[in-house]
Length: 232
Image 1 (tube, rainbow, N blue to C red):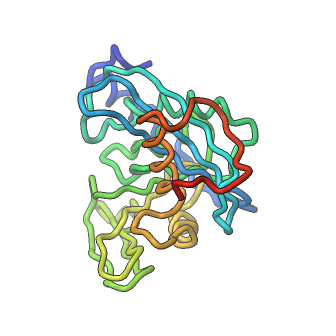
Image 2 (image 1 turned 120 degrees about the horizontal axis):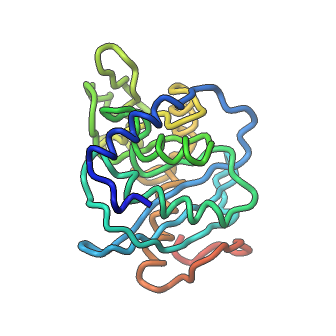
């Protein structure tokens, strides 16, 4: 999909896609998805997964997994060009779309407001939130050490996201609206997705699923969950 793109092409597309961003509240959130990618270093194969959970109960309902080949380089600020094509392939397997999708990466907390969550959100016309493990951009103010503490991340006074503490004294995660959701609703939703780990449940469970897919424990396709998976 993007293998023939130069970085100049990629920047141009990010700027074009950013013109379509919209930030409006999501009403009646019933399900929330987590999306993640796993790959072996140096490999061109992306193992993609999307898990769907009930909200706010966070019980796993179903998941979809697929692989995708790409040669687009792994470069900060261009994550969407490697991951979004694989995630869109998985997205096509899901008939009953979730209310919101949380992606392991940034939304508009990005130099061109086009992190992987925004990139996916615009192309899928879907409400998305970015939940990144490290900060890519913006003026970060460290939150208080207590769980649920959050501080704004800005650039030139523009609110780009939040640093959120998910456990006492642990490193924060970085929350930003992707598309079709507001910044403050993104933060509120993610606070409700915190479990016993640093990474909130949607992307944590997606990470577990795609890793098991990558090492051959799970088969590609759409799967309904009738019983809790042993890996949880």
